[in-house]
Image (cartoon, rainbow, N blue to C red; front, side):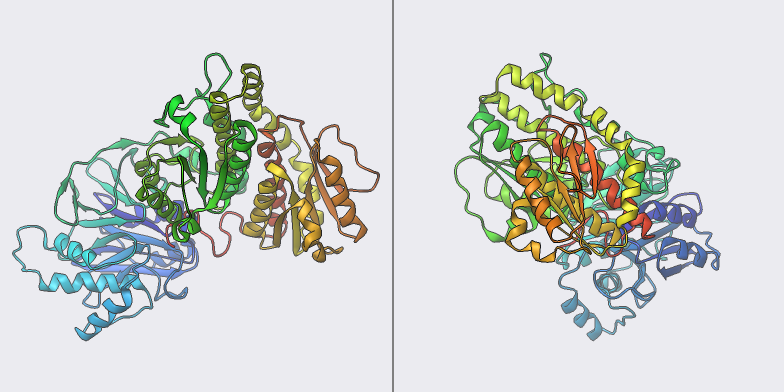
Length: 616
């Protein structure tokens, strides 16, 4: 969840590091720091708060060195203090280290190191690892054939339990950097006699588009002219250099107030990218090149299991509904974080799908590995080429929506909804969906970008509605069938960025408990589209109004409500059932965004949250 940037090259490292941290701040913004090798020692600066605080602090230092590491933190071990900020130095000042992850056995290691005379200035597990490297370095012969620095890092990591992405520098190895990963993303950017190690492509894309995605258990040793990748067991690894297909402009605000706003309005183009080239020539079904499963194998699947966390789990719930509705095959959605540990009984021939925008979500990765350990085929819906999940699954579907910087997911979520709808079609056409129904379904999918643009045109009016409700501290979001997950997503978005308490429920469940919350101080957002249960939803709204609860209703064109029933109505286009969840998502994204802005919240950097959850 934290952001790491390391640099070895010809330029002043501090400039590169601070630029990279600004682009990675969405990964953590409790504190930030950097360390640079210069004049035979480690010079460092670190401050609590945003990267801007570090930039000011760095001006008090004369950073001229060309090798350094940096970090922006999302706290796990230890409070948010200057002392707990990274980088951490070993007590002999021979190493500086930045770390993303959790060292689970840090306590026993720390106890041993204290007995060996090492001292500690912080409460973090990271400082323990840094001192452990120093301990092995002190024991390593000075004339060891391989780099003494590299081998000390290797030996320390062999004693570590947990997850890590690390970058380390040592003044006795000037111009060198060692980085390693296990369960936490790390990428090497390959430039012209310069290299950048980072947690995310966004930190290095302005300098190079050539990258190497490190795998778990790999260690990279970097010098100004070359790099070498090996395993913890000293086996050489042949690097595969990939090329990033998007440029730095995709990670800029481009006139928008926030990345979340930008990404909401990017959704029509993002959805077009997700479906481009993925329909059959006869226009009756969806096709995917990376599933590595043919029609015969798909027909043998007797159950689909979708796994995800947070917003991705909501997309899984919609996929579950659409698979059962259109493909007539049993499906279920499960929290990835729970699946791994609850030992669910599985039988028959299930197919697993994991949903993860980053491809690095640690709980989803753990669920993936558990399913594969039990012999099941696992596919992925993922937005990040080269991610761990992309590499470890048996196949999958890339989203192709470009970088998503805002912590609260928007375009990645609607893309996952779209891919779930396309997957339902893909399976349905192999089973009992007719050609004509398939053509109608495909046409509906192709029309989604235009429908989303139509809803986005209502942004000024939704902003007015948002400002009328921004003072409330409790909300309910209520929907049924495929829109129940969108109610959950609407509540989550509001919680994430405005800190308003919000809950999502199936509308029919309201009278089984949540109705106790209804009052003039608790607005309810209802999804009430045209359909067979429209009248039942109207009854639920009437129950709220009878108890003086304000009601915001999101409905489809052509629906009529009794006079005065709804306090505010947001209308979306009438559309195919398969794409309704996508279209219905846009109003609650805008509503949450504008409420957060009205409350003067930091929309792109909500408190306590980070973009990619890489720790359990």
